[in-house]
View (cartoon, rainbow, N blue to C red):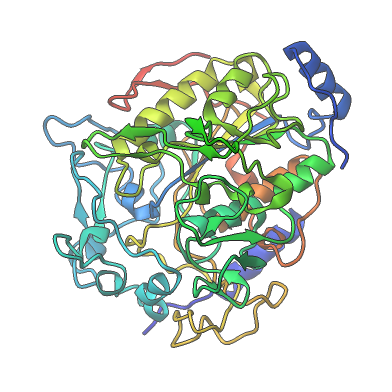
Length: 520
């Protein structure tokens, strides 16, 4: 019998009740950090509803929850691997049971990866394929629908998972801070869908440069590169109409920025067009460019784009309005942060080789990025009022055993969750826009902050737009509107304890993910 597509009535009612409870620009070209501080004080970055004054959103790639946390907090601890022993009282998660591990309803059982397992084949993480894999709630067709059956690839690869002997840093952060085991992609679909949901809660309003099946009824359902960027990897692009969280932050004079590795041009053509050819090699020897324009969500919107990848006019201007228009290289983040100019809201995108998922990345490369980031942030004076939100754009089509709750139905030729052309039978809840079947697959989400709960697992239903909801509520920005999922997203607040900032700093070794010391 299929698993119900919606939560039980009491659980849904409680979730909806929790949801219910819960411009002008700065014109000067600033030249000093002191000037930036003065401007910030004048325009109210400190005016928050919680003690959090700095939100750092780290948006990684292509990881379903079970892929990293299916056996948490129990690792196999084989010889030669970084050991992991959970702290006393560590809560369990909604992960694998013995039945799921040994008698899985899919045509292959989950299997444990070792640290040297490359992701050269990946899975099919298309909007339609992922819905078919969940098969009307039976969650039993991942091998057939999302498995990569190309020559030389193992169609069962997407059933694999890591444990705390490989994703050691993430498991250690989960021990000392807060994580969710009930957070989802806002809709089904791949990376560019996820980033649009993160920045706007909206994949409708897509306008392509040429007709494409990747846009259905005006809704983007597949990876299409942004029009407002000099560095797309294809000639077919699209732009988005409507508004995003950057527009709300600008309206309220809150400093912010999106920081991508590889955004800084490696060269320019004679007409000034940016060239983004920075490359890096992962631990398996695979070399690729680090920047993907489609992973930079604000580049889809003319109002928040920096098409030619222009640099900020000064370090003090980072986070404010100037020629960079809030879109930066990741080196600009550290230049600002280490000079006391950390924006109120920062979105970070690592280079492809450090994003976790995809054929050019790996959990160990990702661990180096994560640990270096958290170690450096904890040494800043702003750490005492900072929250890092660590999250992912999509599931890569990999196996996760939890059927996502359906909160927005859709009936297009691309939908297939409950039957051909169907994701439920009701009209779409949000503005009537089709092609936004969601919630999508379950994804990891973690909050690392002095104010996060300690060794805590949150079971609140949340999704990618819960992040912009938190930002909206923390700075009193209002909602985006026009059918954005931020109107119905669950809150992140249960992962915090705003009365007692008791989560101690945790410094890890980037190579092993193991603790190297702790500072209060």
